[in-house]
Image 1 (spheres, rainbow, N blue to C red):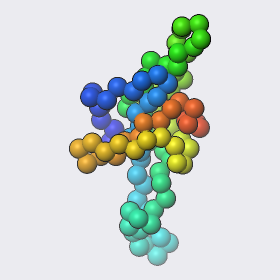
Image 2: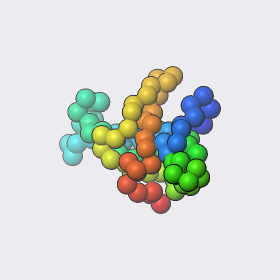
Image 3: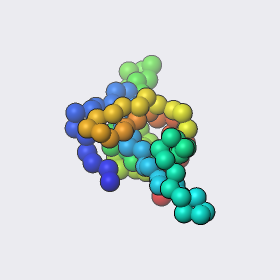
Length: 100
């Protein structure tokens, strides 16, 4: 599933997420094509930045860690494609929940 991406290092309070694509099938067993699917809102965190820089010069620690499965806002982040894989760079504020 999620693999480590060493050539992308998020800055500040940003994180790199690999969206979890769910195969959608109708009740009658028809598999929906990519264009008919909703955007995924779950993903696995692959890398995190050092945290937001505070006015005092210190860094606010990130609540999200690598390998966390997260729920994020539907149209949040910037999409990135590398080696035929889709990734998102999100701000920590776009993360709605950490899924257990």
